Amino acid sequence: MNRKIAAVAAIATVLVASACSSSGSSGSGDAKQATLSKDGKGKTVTVWLMDDAQKGWPAVVDAAKKQFEEETGATLKIEWQTWTNYTTKLDTALLSGNAPDALELGNTQAAKYIEAGSFVDLTGVKGQFDNSDKWLDSLAASGQSADGSKTFAVPYYAGARVLIYRKDLFAAAGVTNPPTTLDELKAGLAKVKAANASVPGFSALYIPGQNWYTATAFGAGSYGVKNVIAKKDGDKFTGTLTDPKFVEGIKTWNDLQKDFSVGGTTTDEATQDALMAKGNIAAIIGAGWEVGSVIDPKTGDPSLADKLATIALPGTAAGAPTPAFLGGSDLAVPAKSANAGLGATFLQIYTNTKQQTELAKFAIPNNKTLVAAYKAAKPENKAAGDAAEGSTWFIPNSPLWSGADETALKNAFGAIAAGGDAAAELKKAQDTIVKDLNG
Image 1 (cartoon, rainbow, N blue to C red):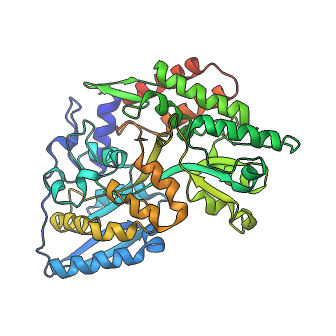
Image 2: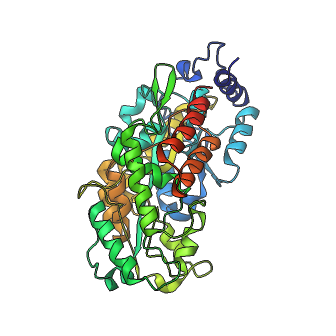
């Protein structure tokens, strides 16, 4: 039994889902088909949601709960979760037969459960979900089968990386308008660098070498957003990291790193917010919420609150940002749920236009139609909204993608930032990743 068959079979066993056959076929192939039920009288429907919603948009949850209970007659029980050790808890719940009727999970976590047949197949009812034809591309893909033909998880909300920069430092260097292209960004960074030449360790744009999200975004900017990192040909994955167009994008990233970033070649983005708060970094690339981290009274510098701005990371042409990795959450119904039809109905209500419009005041909604509402809610939302509306990319949709593959990318980009040959280092990462994905 090869690694792929063993891994998928193990997942299926742990999750009490459809076991893989000895040929390694996906457990999602014969998954339970979803229905939408409103027959809830006397029933209690349990839903697991992350406490991000409890803290950020509780009124949206309350409104969906009220509508669901009125329309179905069921009682809805929300059980709040945290991300720490979440998949371990979910695995245990599925094994013990105590899984909820609907749940949230990160979009990078979904593939292994989909492959194991752990969720009901929502393909047949997808068209009854508001805006399902306008779901954000990368978020929608994370909830699909590997071949993209079936839907097992519904997009919930998203987050995108942006350029966070010091307006005051850029203005002092004569850069008063936000850059709209990479060439304008480079020109602006050169001015900021020159204006701060006397500041020890100053970075006009701090780019940690091992921040694989940022590096890969530049690769996708040249190569394209489909099949970034690897693509599936039949039953096998082949690598795309060594494609000349991808390498071209990585060289653009490396030039920015060499020209404008000081230090951090062998580290990732974990400390960049704290470093920016110290005052000798003019710009970073990170999630929009990192602004709050930079100005946090305990870990950052609150005096920077009025000095920070965000824009979508410029691309080669105005109006076409560098492709962003679209992180976020999906919603699914466990196949072993006793109330699967009601669970699916809750997801339908919770992601309808009304609820997503309200959610858009706090987070990027799950569809392109309502991103405009998110951008209009607060000025600082525009950058992440622009990034989400633009081209986005995602990791290979496989249950065998793992932390080891992320480490391979980190090591490759760190080595390139430290002076290594881009094509050679990417080949090393590609060999590791393709071997993993093919089991």
